Structures are given as C-alpha cells and as structure tokens.
Length: 366
Ligand SMILES: *Cc1c(COP(=O)(O)O)cnc(C)c1O
Image 1 (cartoon, rainbow, N blue to C red):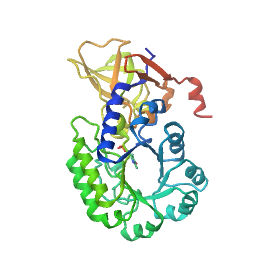
Image 2: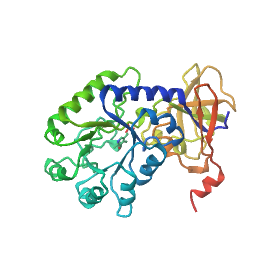
Image 3: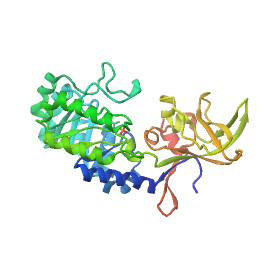
C-alpha cells in the first residue's frame, strides 16, 4: 500500500465508463475524444485508448501530450495560438480548431499548407453551466464566434465547428432541446460542414443516463446535416474512478471535532475552493468530523465526514471523485507533499506509478 497522500485510480471503475463510451460510439456513429484539460494522467491511457477515438486539447502542451501518449485522432484547440506555437501545433494535430475569426485569418493558410482540417469554435450563446466562472455563454464571452455573418466569412476555410456549451449536464431532455435550438439557429451552416463537435459536459456515463436515447439523437443529428459528430468527454470519461487517499495526522476539538489530514484542498483538490463545494467524504455512521487540510490557509476544509467509529490518528480516509479537474490542477502550495499516483488493478493489486519528492518541489521554481 503506497504512503498517503495518493490519488488511487480504480481500473475496474474506469473500464465501466469506457464500456459506456464504446457503446455510445457504436450505437451513434459519433466519435469520442478525451478532453485533456479535465484529465491528463497518461499512465492510464493504455486502459482508455481502445474505447475512445483520441484526444482534444486546450494548449500546445496538452496537444503534444495527446499525440505522444494517447495517439489516434488528435484535435488541437486553443483560445489563442501564439505565432511561435502554430507550426509545432499543426505538426501534432489532425484538426485545428480556432477560437476566433481573427485567429483563423492569421493561421488557416498554414493549416491548409500542412493538409490538416481547420475548424472554428461556434458559441451558441446558451449553456447549461450554473457557474458564471465556467459559463461559456456568459456576457461578452470570448469563447467562440456566434455572429452568422462572421461565421459565413469562415466557411470557405473550415470543414467543421466545435460547440462546447454543456457542463455536467445529466438531463437528456435538456440536451435534446438545446441541440434542437442549435439545429434551428445554425442549421443552414451545419449543412455545409463535414464535422461538428458538440464539446464535452454531457454526463452520459452517470447512473441511469438514457444512453440509447442519446445515441439515437446523435445519429439523427448526423443524418440530418450529413456531418460526423464528435463528443469531447472530460469529466464523463473518468467520473467516480479515482479517490484521494489521505491519513489523519491530528484530531482537534475547537467546539467541533476536526481531523487534520496529510493533504490540502488548495493543493490537491483546488476546484472545491473555486466552486465552493464540499468533498465527497464517507457518510457511514454517527461520528462526525470536519476533515481539514494541513496548509495554513484558514479555510482549507474538505467537508464533513460521518463515520461508523471514532477516528484515530493514522486512520485512512478516501475522498471520492478525485480525477476530473483535480489531478491536472495539483500544485505545491505550502510545500505539502504531492500525492503519488497509484492504480488499483482489476485483481485488486495496487501499484504506484509515480511519486513526487523534494526535488520535484524544488524543480517547480528556481
Ligand atoms: C472543458 C472542455 C471539454 C470537457 O468538458 P467536460 O465537462 O469535462 O466533459 C470539452 N471541450 C471543450 C472545448 C472544453 O473546453
């Protein structure tokens, strides 16, 4: 058993998600690309590659990682490419998706010269995001073009569009209605394209999601417009596959029982702070503890755990759902030991694939 803290990826759980993705691809004809900004832990790509079509990216480094470690179809997107990045990016990409007409004007001839497909991000001006911070349709959003005249200007240089507007959307009927809105508002444009990426944010690997209704809807969309649809699942690919394993270092009673663990929200589960959410902690019995991190940030609190037995120093706690937007954001705040990365294999054995030490901390600055 590796030392704590570590992220523990359960390969059997990952396989369940992969089976759903493979089924959706087969039943719908749509392709599925892993969104690396959500999850880029490449040590498990051998367990994902056969079930997905490739990767999509949000920067040159993600793009290169996708090409090098996942392979297959590799989409390149960035909110803005720099002049010094573009040729290298085109060298890794099968398709390059520009965020604005300005970027398309600047770089599309290079994509064309290299013989790769170019696309543009289309912003439909609605989304399912409940957080302003993460809402691509927020007022004055810089994510994609929406004006029909501007989209028309791009048409002779693009073969497809990327439309990312869902966020952990577990409601198929809402997805269906919004796709209909896209069909109604942008249908004339879609008819003239070869491919349409519907982005990520569809929670189709969740319990009880009507996968076959989604497959039928995607097939109808593709048939109607004569396009190849792509999905870009990030969170849906790895949801509920991973835990952050921590140990109790101290127990304090300051009017509340507080267990301090060898980890930190800010360093190891940053999104909890950004989105003001509680960690998914054990809920098993009457003994209640606030689970808190070991940094000197006063609000470094994971949430409340309810346990069957009183906690003791040295006890282990598993914090659920620690893959998406978590491992990609870990950092060295407070110099807290970086969680190792371990795999739980289908036969139950646990193997550490990466651990970090003082030299990694030191090398992260100079
Ligand atoms: C973030 C993002 C994704 C992945 O979103 P999930 O909610 O993790 O599925 C896919 N495509 C684009 C363009 C994104 O920005």
